[in-house]
Picture 1 (tube, rainbow, N blue to C red):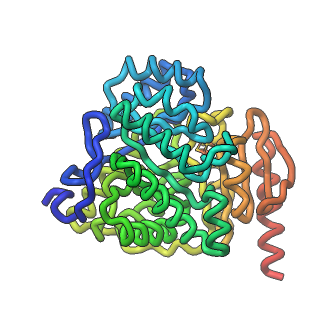
Picture 2: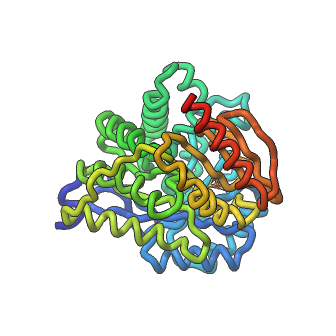
Picture 3: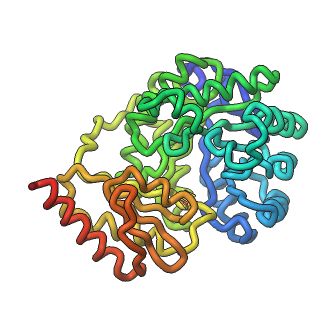
Length: 378
Ligand code: SF4
């Protein structure tokens, strides 16, 4: 039986030579972790992901120089490309003619051009996408929900997330633009399941892009992802997906292989028993073009090895690859590390402990972990 036969029927969204939703097979995506301005490395990684079976490859851009690099990357690869506008939605008109899909985060639209309403910004994005035959992904994350929705739904982060996504769907549909998909992501698989179920119940016609952010290193990162994807896919929810794993660049294509394996297992009724996710929880980002020190991936692996002795404790440690999103994305973890070019910042929840060299930060983390275990025992 093909994927399409047991899935709900959403509208079909064309993305370059492939499609998401409708009667299309589930599309597997991945994202480049190379520096976008390093054209050779990014083309090589795009092709590496494409060869592994990625239907769409996402590349992040922050500025005009990266737009220029993207133009050349487009010229050198046949992969369907999606672009992540990150905090700068104004770059959309410069890239829509180059790529097949643009992703914007409703939680980042208020950062620039504060005099304009969100509806005006969405109208502009839709017109740019329409003019270039480009699809859109509305990508909401628990870590960056739009402030007005957090105010509207105090202490209900998931509801704020879902309603923010629904609101953007309605804005786009009111503009007669329907070539969009939605993602609702978090690092907690249970939240991903709940958010996607709620959204699918309200907007069953909209294709969903599944993802568990910052799932971390394999094999635990794969397990977290499977917990969410197996449940949702078995319910017929999910028209495209990305597995986010912390991996060195030469192994990045494993994200794609894992994505295909999960789809194949669900299709054939092979499910892992739902694992006990209590105990030590290490989350780490999949890395992207913003990583400034490649020691990040090794650090994430070393954190996992060093903390094995604490596996029975319900403690979350977050390891993030950059100084742009790292500070915010570590706030909710019991202990957090985010990586700068030459130092790593260590945190207790939102409180900064200090910045330490890559060679000593593990010892500092161990001191903090021991103190936290002692404090909880007392
Ligand atoms: S935390 Fe930074 S390096 Fe990691 S994926 Fe997010 S933006 Fe990229």
